[in-house]
Length: 210
Ligand SMILES: Cc1cc2nc3c(=O)[nH]c(=O)nc-3n(C[C@H](O)[C@H](O)[C@H](O)COP(=O)(O)O)c2cc1C
Image (cartoon, rainbow, N blue to C red):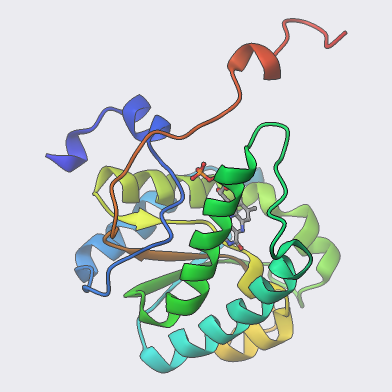
């Protein structure tokens, strides 16, 4: 059973899955993902995460259009040169960019776009948004892990959210709410595999850094 994977197996195999099938995801599974997200901690236990599951084709198309604008700006300087990072070969980076472009072309067809939002209780101000990510990203990670455990593909994305006014208009957010992350969810086209990260001894020290 997919949902009997151990927690460590899930964490070590929770890759960004951008190529997704158009097949619908049962509503109960989508709600289960958000319920899992909602178990995460928040600063002062504010519980101010809010979640929108977008299935309406018209709303998906508008979000896909915003994502296209964000992705085009993101890839523009790199096109053709797919720069390697110290920990990521040029080949791997170029494959990641291919997947980002695939997602850009197909986002409107993905069965569900889950938007992680926050409710601030007062009119949203960009400084509040910048300072409050710590209270929504644990929930986003819970959602990604739950999706992986259920055999669903997902990716945390932010490029579609670069124009907050446009996003708020599409999602009809009140002025007290902000969208923090867009997570396309569906059954994966390809296979799940292990994540590839820097070895722990390179990114960890005991007691002090130097
Ligand atoms: C804050 C944040 C923003 C991200 N934004 C995007 C995005 O806009 N588009 C996208 O395709 N992936 C996005 N990602 C996914 C990352 O590219 C991905 O998690 C990273 O490359 C590791 O992928 P892997 O787990 O498959 O190795 C984002 C991830 C994070 C944590």
